[in-house]
Image (cartoon, rainbow, N blue to C red; front, side, top):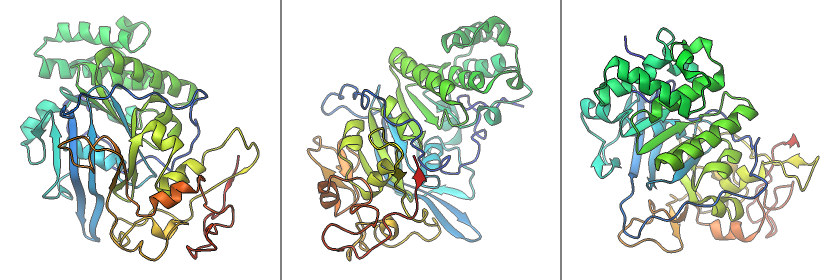
Length: 413
């Protein structure tokens, strides 16, 4: 029986692929000092560490085809943190699990035409043995709930040491010594004693630190963190985020952060990719997204955040729910909930590159600015977040959108 470690070689210990952990709650909000400064730009023409192009991960079920991820493209450059954000069910977690082939087959299948390239190597269609050689080695993953990812019948030191024995050929004694060092590096007190503890003997924050130690054991170039702070209280969450940022800088690794918390994004990410209904709807730097949101869905997410400028006010809420992946709407998948929707939004919407695109790079996957909305410039020009015409949801142009559902309730701040 092999320990089920998120960062280790186990290929079935991923937990449920539910697409996220709840709607964006805005609990933390952007830090007082504004959004995090972006990392240094990669050299012009440099190949990205991870390149995902037109990724389509579908589930073939008795009820029909669930198109959970439906044409997602993005890049992660070496040393940067890319945050993927969106509501529960938008496809965030399925995207992350697709990268390492951790979804059950069947019913999941990465559809022909999808591409996942790591260091230039194509992973779609790669042999299982090759994927196992990469997991926990060149790419590591931290899952949402460490208690369900760690094996309850093995000491945590054995689970941290497993990738070292498998990928680095270490003996048991050497792996144990390295596990103690890693536990000390991630801030676990008294690691010489804790190395023999079982997961149930540790707090939630300590278990997550064990998962991070396991992820770092083979010094990966890419760390995928799927909601790493969801089950933690605010104080421990801040400690884990600070630890991840420190370790990223110390080990010069890239991080792909899956989250629903915009406050986390503002604090630790360099760039942001906003997902909705299985698609990427907007991408840009953290500063661009937080100060100049273009897509109505992104504006809705930001508009739902509490503001210190308006204490006691009602929070805006996006009406309705994410549509079923069994029956995505035609055209813009957000149009049935969008206060800017007009005739023409039923047409297919493609990602539109904004600004300059690096040479020899596809616009829709370039690290620059992109949005999936043909009315983005009009929405951005309003200077408002959500809704475009106040609480009534009326459009500024005399009801051009013909909708009165800009807010379907709210929450007291």
